[in-house]
Length: 296
Ligand code: PBE
Image 1 (cartoon, rainbow, N blue to C red):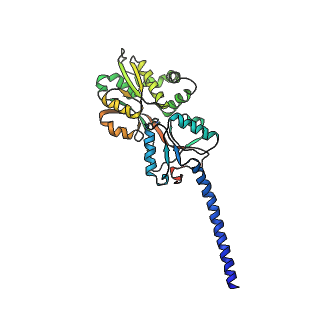
Image 2: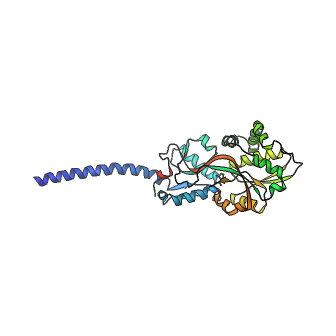
Image 3: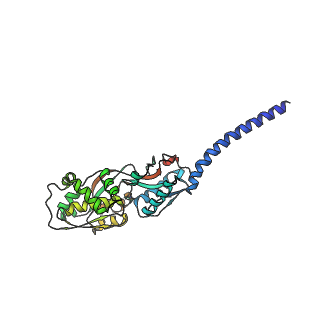
């Protein structure tokens, strides 16, 4: 009798335990399913981009990202995957950055990054080759004066979804003559001096290169713009093949290139404060921090 009671008690507690485990399991399974569905893969962009470098570093420094992979592709490819996932409310984690128009068309969140794998907030810098200030002091003065805000860049990037970048930049330029004149005020006009700007193949950089090009052209310079991968950009500036750029993101995104080439070029400092890059998810996903992503 006593034994039977004990047995009953133990069965009861066992089933209670099982019930507890069961409900835990279900919750855990659901969470895991979401990440299994993504194949523990982060949707990345071009292998040569700075953000890809930061994402690789992020995978290394967070223990919970053990087993996760970064799928490198292209910005266009990432955008297509984001669009498809978003339309079907499926889970996706991308490498993303702001300014970017995806934040205008989708409800997204940048995951908190307590270990700063993507750096704290970044600035976009203006840089020249060594000696530009001596060779072209007036152009250098304009480059050095160049300063604008995230909203300005974002406005062009967004408008360029409907019209060409030339048109979007020209419209912004025409509407913001007060700001532009702050960059050129007191600087003598050129009589056709040539200057080679170098840029990167992303919308944000197309926007800034177009605006700087328009500014210099309207001040009498003969501007040529080339768009290349970040590593080529830094090399070109370091060996003096290009004159200037308004595109590097620092201290993290292009930090590795800066370490390699920083001594052989001139950093004129930030032209846009508060750029952000990181892991980005649709708002319908139930995670807020990189630390919320479960290990594989
Ligand atoms: N980006 C946009 C670039 C720089 C600007 C963040 C994609 C990169 O990662 O190199």
